[in-house]
Length: 357
Image (tube, rainbow, N blue to C red):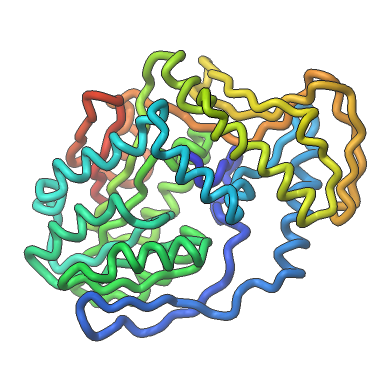
């Protein structure tokens, strides 16, 4: 779903990430370590946050906010709650496919194999892949996340699997992947996991550009397991992003709360309403915050004052949906071939195994 919206070709993707250094892999199976260098300073983080907010909210035509900022501590907890809502079937479909086909997926890959995951979260779904690999080899697993708490949760989830060593990277996707690729041996192959529907957060052109950057980091024969949410009934899709319990609304509105807390904003949340829209031309769900009245907004740390008109919206996130058959073309355009595809029957969602060519 929602890791970071990129509506242009922002190939750094998670720009708010902390920098991190590297450490040697742990020597014993099941051990875990984090590639943790001094975190980004609060001053630097706030300056970048303020700059992004100012630039996004002053865009002509449609005001925006970068969705990477949805994921503070509260936002991350709300997203975890979204993933278990009955209306949001994507996460369960993702997990079902991995559980059912992990051995088949692994069986198509070359050994010795190392695994890197872009945006691992807690890593729960990845367990199926790692357990399948552990049946045939010792494996290093490299979760790449901007959230230290997510990395710690991932270590707890994965650190006890026999013959699997966890080395986490608190980095942006591409920076983390480059660090992983640089440390592997000459004979090691790499499987990159990009699960959920995070690719859908990119505009289609920007998604292609991101996959090309991933391909540049890989060797011929390396693999990318890519999750894609598929087109389904509009009503089903809207409900998944605007649940009756209001969890997604709270998740979206929390972005304004974060600006108030961290940047000295004065958004009145009672003057906004969460809205999920289906953009048929682009085949995407859009999340907006709708201004219910004319209001003046001040954000002190962003040196920004502006007026929102009644009915005007702030666009916070997109999730593009795909047809199963278009993935092969996306792979071909970006330096891969689609070796196999598995589609969930209950919630149209696909796991796609792409091989670097």
